[in-house]
Length: 125
Image 1 (cartoon, rainbow, N blue to C red):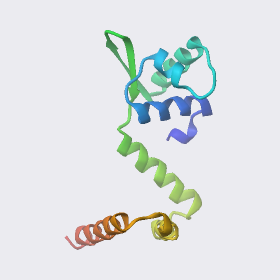
Image 2 (image 1 turned 60 degrees about the vertical axis):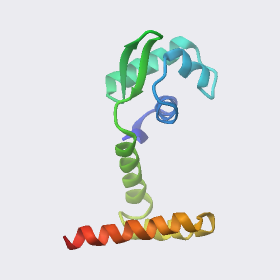
Image 3 (image 1 turned 135 degrees about the vertical axis):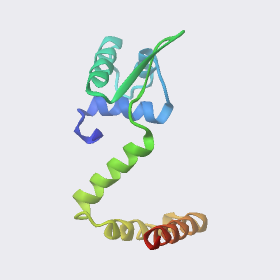
């Protein structure tokens, strides 16, 4: 979904996911590459037209927010990664993540075990 956006538009949407609702001026100030305010406003308008961003009035001006909840965007992005890099196999993707277990603490591993148990229960029901 988001991977189809041009890089600068994708950076704007990523900023909105990271920081929450922002004005065009705040996006301009937070943008990693120097861009004019008019360029940012144009991209925000395009993103709104494409359905990636919503705009709401506020006392500070228009506030822009991602149109899709972050959980939905994460799931879509992860599905794309699994499809492209792991031939659609969630097991292969999970195995790759566990291969990075030196970066995981015991709490994260416990959480993974809990999620696997929940998934098994859901399959049995």
